[in-house]
Length: 128
Image (cartoon, rainbow, N blue to C red; front, side):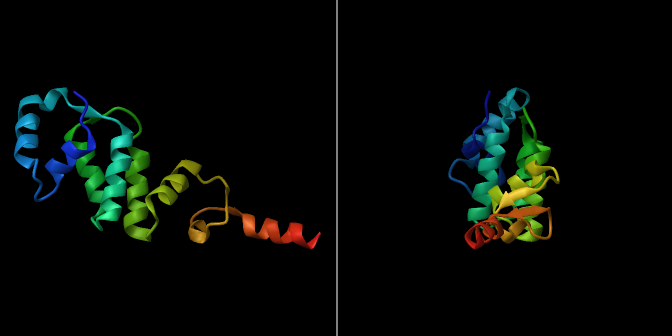
């Protein structure tokens, strides 16, 4: 059974209108439940939007059900969100870049990865 985001949120949150139903389903189907990395990305976004601990939310969800796909990328991104103030997608881009130069005008990456600044390239082109 595929576990969607609202199901996992109901299990993780302290209070949720679906928490009782989610707990019953989890208890009865624990060994059948799985999800995808996309669910973890959505949980990362929800945690960021609701000012929750993104790292804890993603790690807790990943511990509840089998995740078929790359979990480590999303957990690493959640760490950058929590510890360094990254937005969820900037953190995902940073982790996925695997230390390669990031082409971006976004200064967020400055202390974390080599960056080819599009603003600098643009300024150089204007000088020509």
